[in-house]
Length: 344
Image 1 (tube, rainbow, N blue to C red):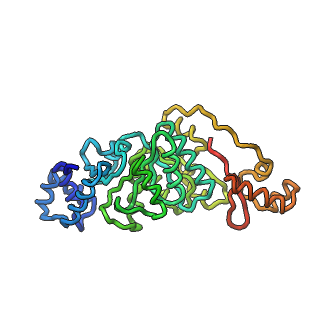
Image 2 (tube, rainbow, N blue to C red):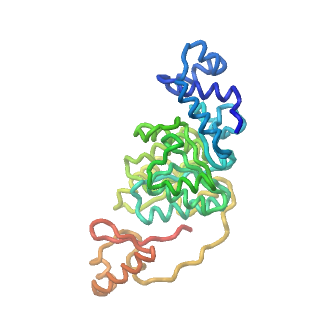
Image 3 (cartoon, rainbow, N blue to C red):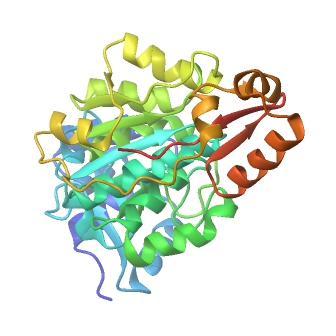
C-alpha cells in the first residue's frame, strides 16, 4: 500500500508527540496552520519508532487506514464535535464511518434480558438503515455489535486501546468479525494498553459518530452515562430503556429519563424520533407459556410463583429450567427469576 499523503503523516507525527495533550496538539495546529509548521515552531518531534510502526501497520493490508482530520474520509459527524482526534486508526469497511450511525451502550455485567434487548434493538435498527456503534466491551456492547452485524447496516467498534490490541480478550472473535464485515476504529496509538482513563474519553467518539445513543441497562455510576452526557453536549438524541425499580441495572437508565432522555420500549420508538420510517414487519410471537404470565415482568422467587399458580416447587423448578435453556427466563442472584421478552 502507498504511504499516506504528507499532510496525514504530519498530523500523525503531531498526534504522537509525547507530553502534548490532544488539546495542546489541536491548539498548536490552529495557531501555526499546519502540523509541520507546528512541529517546527515548537521544536518537538515524536519518537521515530512510533511513526514508523503506524505507517508499517497501515501498509500491510488494504483494510487498514490512517485517517487524518481534514480528509474527505474523516467521519463527517465526528468532525463536528468539540475535540475531534487528529488521526483515526481504522480497520475494516471504512465507508461505514460516513454512514448514518446509532450508538447502543450499557452495562458490562448486563443480564440475559439486557443482552437480548441490546441485540434485538441493534438488529432491527441495523435493518432499518442505521450502522450500530458501540465500545466492544462485555455485555451490552458486545450484544449490540452482534445485532448490528446480523442486520443490513453492520456495526462499528470504537476502542479504548491501540487498534492492534483487543480488549477484553474474550471479544477477539467478535473483533475479527467486525474487521471482516464492519469496522474497528480508535484514536489511540498502536500498542496503547487498556488504561482506565482512556475509556471515558473514548466514549465521546461513540456518541460523536452517531445520530443518537440508546442506553440499555446501567447502574447509577456506569460509564455508559458519560456516553449519554457526551451525546447531549454534542446535540445528539439520548434514549434509555427502562427496567424494574428493583434492579440496580435500571437506576442509570431511570436517571437519564428523569434528566430528559427519551424513554423507549421498541425500536420503532427510536426510528420515529429520528424521522425514519419504522419497520412495519411484526415478529412472530413465541408460544405462550402460562408460567411466564404468572411471573409478570419483575424479578420473582419460586415462592411467589407458587402462590400465584398453586403449583408445587418441584414442578415450577422443572419448568423454569426448561425456560432458562430456551432463553426465556433469566436466573438472578438471590434465587429470583425474571422473564426475558423480545423487543418490538
